[in-house]
Length: 91
Image 1 (cartoon, one colour):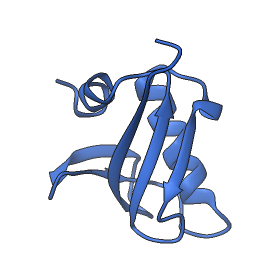
Image 2 (cartoon, rainbow, N blue to C red):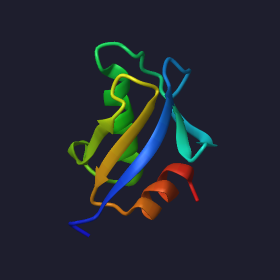
Image 3 (cartoon, rainbow, N blue to C red):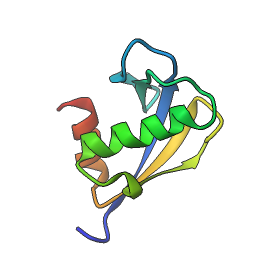
């Protein structure tokens, strides 16, 4: 599994009451983040949340597209795309 990585489309909703996955929209996983979208706090919170749910270290999660947008693409090393979606969506 060392060579595995997954790319995941995510739509973030910052400044929510709590950080959680709320479903899918247009093929992207919708994540509400408690962190505000200032000074990279929302991006850091997203990476930490995805890492915790996927069971990988935070350094294995990287935003590869959309760092300043609500629609982002996240790369997660050490996990397959199927396993990552299952971990986030709880299925």
